[in-house]
Image (tube, rainbow, N blue to C red; front, side):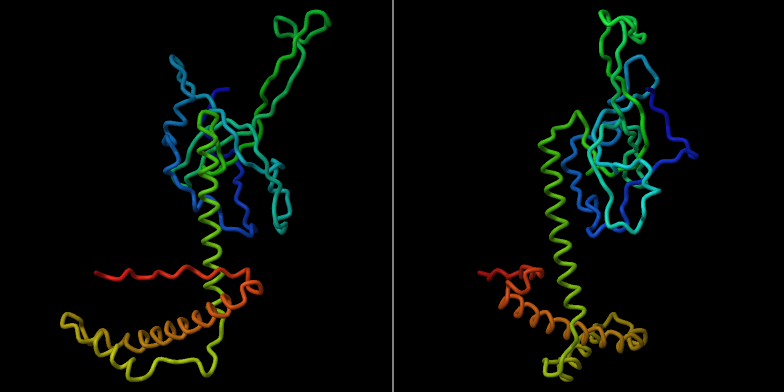
Length: 260
């Protein structure tokens, strides 16, 4: 089947799931695992002496239901599975590949390819039927010509990065939701005045313009100090009761190396 540019009026489905509990995996994809550029992959569909571009064989992680628009958007997830596809195009704007599902269909024919009527002279022929089209990110697409072991490492790398990012996001959300309790140390007036004096002592600064921002900066300094105090409290509680707060991961602290 020759590959043609997608028609603007043709319905093409995207595979984004807006109600997914996880961050999109493609955000954490490492393109260094890709041995070829998108143009190189699509060039595999070229045949010598032909102007048509054929679909590049691959497998893609796609919704089981082709018509996902009919699925209730309030559902927590859609059913996904790996499908045989033909890669048709690539969009630099959204960094995704246009793929088309391929369904295998087998039928009995005679030696000339006509429907077999004689049981003695018939053979089974597998044909490909084109299905729905989808835009998919590279992390959900494995070309038949690439090393599957490298692709597995690519997915594992992205999953590990996403797990760390989600853990950090949840940790900082916990800190931001903590109230600032009485009795917690606050930044003293002398220290705050010293910070302001040193910040405004730079000769090249325009003091008239900065005076309007001093109050806002002072509020930010106080807020960041209080937030740091809450982080210390949270870290201590989590580390003292790891079983109770196993869902919270305390970030590793950067320990400065001692100079020689």
